[in-house]
Image (tube, rainbow, N blue to C red; front, side, top):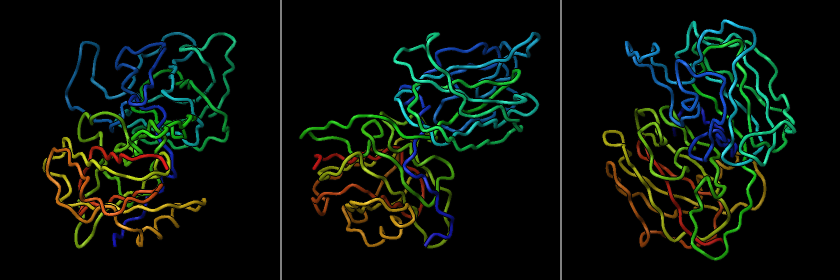
Length: 330
């Protein structure tokens, strides 16, 4: 077994990610770095010695030095309305140019841009920030929101804004074949044993991964280990086709993978789910994977029974861009 501490994802996804349709709809300034970078799904990077016409290239949102009263802010429209549980205000690589303090507000509006009647609610009071750091906070207000305002005092740069929560969507599938592991349909990551290089939730995203950072990638394991991730399906269903996509993963794709599944009809903790998963039935026995390729499995699927949880095991480690489990809602 892997000795690393398991990562409890608790069914939360990043509501701010651009892949869900989230957009920055307003910003007071973006002189040094465009605001849209703050919601890129991949981790920020640093380019040593790279400058553009306005100064040092930075992977995030950075405003000019303020020479008047007030502060800078941006407004983010979430791709899907949702409840916010946690946030991460990431100042990675911003050292000496990070904001002095930050705060967050949120509102619900049916319009692209909130109007004067929109009621903004403070969900994170003004707090100091540190250079080159993640700032994690739990959010107590569990109202459904459509927009988030990030205030930075008085100016500066933020690499990424992660808004972890649950989407408020209606699940209407009918009898058609559906991707039950798509985040757009309501699938969520529950728990994994490692996500060192790429976040587990990435493999549920729509479309093709843009790069290796837009996938789930684990650290290099040593010894007889394997890595795993458990996903809660959008709805219970019978799986008739699986696609494992290793797009962009060429020297770091898993050698093999297997899939297990189960139907759990009551609410239990992620730890209990992980413990039980060791005895789940196999949907797909261990199969060989290849670099930068879509692997489709249909005839090799073992049991066509109703499940609402899928566990993907990768041997011994590596990266996967997307998993797609097609089936009919049962």
